[in-house]
Amino acid sequence: MDDKTLGLEAAYSVKSPDDNRRLYAKWAETYETSFVDAKQYRYPKAIADVFNDVVSPVNRVLDIGTGTGLTGMYLQRLRPDLVIDGMDISPEMLAQARLKMREDGVAVYRALYERDLTRTVPNENPPYEALFSSGTFTHGHLGPECLRNLLPLLEHNGWLVVGVNNEHYESKGFEKELSSLVDLGLIQSPEILRIDVYEPGSVHYGDQARVIITRRLK
Image (cartoon, rainbow, N blue to C red; front, top):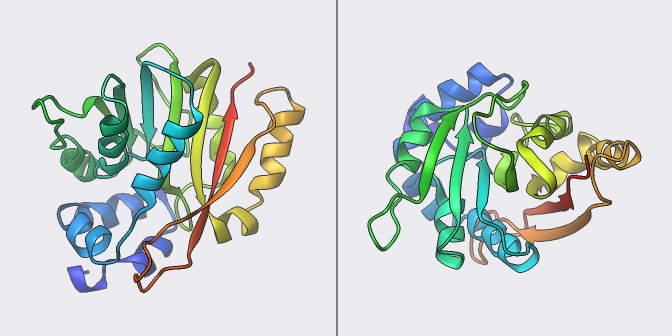
C-alpha cells in the first residue's frame, strides 16, 4: 500500500486492531499533508471548539484516539492551562503527536500511551476530568460497545465529548447503547450535536459527525 491508496477508503475498510496498526504505521508521516490538508479535514478543530464551548473549567483531560495530535493541539490553543494526555493504538501516530508543541516550546501532550481501546483500557493515572475524541468512532474503528471501556477512565461527573461518524452512529446502534448506559445510571442523558467534518470546498463537504456530550455518573 502506497500513499496514493491511503485515505478514507483504506481507513473505513479495516476490520481489526491489527489492521489499524498496519494502516497507520504506513500513513502516520503523511497523514496531515495527504489527508488533513489535502481534503480540508476540520474534524479535530471542530471537536476542540465543541469541547471549549460546552465543558466547564477542567485541568486534566484525555484525548482518545490521539492520532497525530491535532485535536489536542487545537484544544491547547483554546485552553492553554490544560494538562492533556493521549491514547492511540498506533505507536507511529503517537510519535507524530509527540512532536506537537505549544508556542512556549512545551509539548502539547504531557504523556502518550499506546492502548487498544476495544479492550479494557489500563490507566496508570487518576481518573480524568474529561475525555474527548475525534475521528476514532467511525467505520472500521471503534463501535458503541467501546464507550463502556472509556467510563473507568473518567472521574465521577467527568465529561465525555466524543465525535462519531454520522453513518456509523446510525448503522452501529449508538443511540441504543447510549440509552442503555443512561438506564444503568452510568451517564447523564447525552446531548447530541451535529458538526461538519470537512470545510466548504472539500470533495467530502457535507459529511457530518454526531458529537456525544455527556457526563459519567458512576
